[in-house]
Length: 326
Image 1 (cartoon, rainbow, N blue to C red):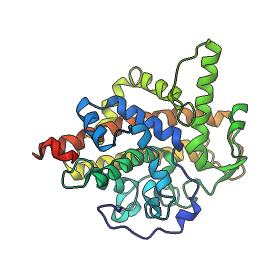
Image 2 (cartoon, rainbow, N blue to C red):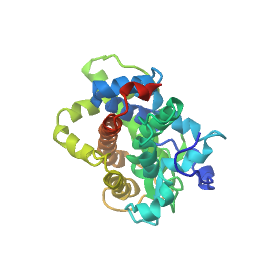
Image 3 (cartoon, rainbow, N blue to C red):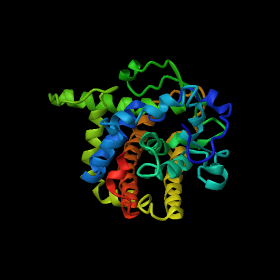
Image 4 (cartoon, rainbow, N blue to C red):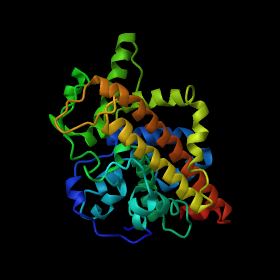
C-alpha cells in the first residue's frame, strides 16, 4: 500500500538506521494517549470506526514494525528529516524534496484520513502513519544531521543516568537510541521510585514498560503548568483548511525539533559537543528530561488538533458523515 505521492527507492540509509525506533513503544504510546485525552466525542466516534475498534495507543507503534518488512521498507525515510551539517534548522525545499520526509508524509497522509473517496483500509493506513509520524517529528534527533545519521553514528557506552538503567539491554549504544528510549525509561524509573517512596501503588495498564506513569504526569502538567501553552502549541497545525498554512505550521514544528537537536541532544548544557565514546551522566539526563517531556506533550496535543481539523474539513465538504465509514 503506497502513499498518495510517488514512492521513491529507499536509500542505503535504511540499512544504517535499521535499529532506530523513534521514541520507542513507550514514547509513541504516550503521545497517542495524550492525543486521545484531547479528542472531541465526534472525532473519537469517527476514529473508533476507522480504527477497527483498537485505540490510538495500540495503533501508534505499527509503522516502526512495518518499515522493517519487505513490503514496508519503502516508508523508512518518512520517519525522519535530515538537515545538512550542523544547520540546526529545517528547510522544506532542501530537507524534504518532493515531500519525501516526515512532515511531507504528515501533510499528504492527513488528507486521506477522513476522505470519503478513499477506501476504509487506506484511511486506516494513513491514520496509523499520521499518529506515528506526528510523534516522530517531535523527537529532536528525528530532525537532525544527516552527517551522523541522526546521532546513530555517535556511538557511546550505556548511559550512566542511574543504576536502574542497567536494566536497559544495550551495553553499547548510540546517541539516537538514548533519545528514542533511554531518557524515557529513566524518567519512568524515577517516577516509579518516587511512588514507592510515597507508599502509593496506583493502577496502570502495562503495554511495554510502565508508560502510563509518564502519561499521567504529562497530562497533569498539561492541565496545570502547561495549560496556557496548549492552544499556542496546537495553533501551529490548526489551519488544515489552507494547505500552504498547514505546511507552514508543520515547518514550525520541525524547526522546533531541529533547534532542540543541537541545543539539547548534540550538546551538553555547557555547549560542548557530545562525541563518540562519551559516557552520558545524570547531569545530561536531567537537562534532557524536561525537553523530552515537553516534546511528548506537544506531540500529543498537536496530534489531537490535526485529527480534529481533518474531520472538520471532511464534514464541511458536504460529505455525509456515514459515508466516511463504509
